[in-house]
Length: 286
Image (cartoon, rainbow, N blue to C red):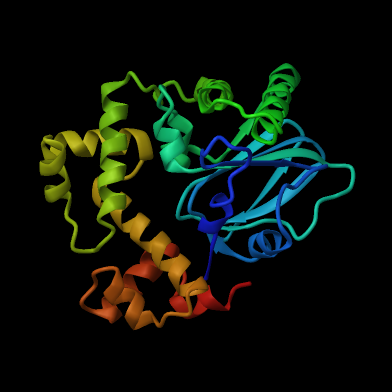
């Protein structure tokens, strides 16, 4: 499977930040980078695409997503991502990638980057879309300016961009607030699961790590995701299993062992129960 990590190694401008931006009229990519991105690859950074006019279709974790007028799609690290081979000539768009180190330098916490289960597309009205275009254009000029630009200036504009997206995203999701204690604990739960992605990880261990009771953890996770903590953990494991089965060329038995399952047959049954398809049926799909 291809890895997108090297795309941010050649950073725009002299800021030293892990940020790249491109648009319909300037890709700022080498031919090697462009060809890499055309194949399915595991994302190693955050990625945004905002379509001002037109329509683009991306594949994220094997799900096709259409992005059209004044819509933004965001993709998170570790998701399997495939862009369209080409874009319609009348499409106007901006694309941006930034790494976790850059995100950590910002003063805010952004709910939309933490809760993709609430949807990975954001719809903006025309006025909001115009503001986004202005910010993208400004960042594009700053990143590729021939004059040296202080990293703090770039970070300030990136913070404004992500705040604009976050506010619109949270408008229809009032429980996704950084100041919400339950939301903060839910994010901590997700990170704990992500950092120990294994069938050997238990709800009791995660609850102990987060210093909450299993009953309280159940209420928090169920409230935000609609799943119990155990269901959430299994769903996340099966999502990762699907990624590896389809794109890594690893056998079913090897994937089972990599994800902490001692019995490959049980792993196969759990995959079918969770996805509604056997592994062979899943792999036969285009």
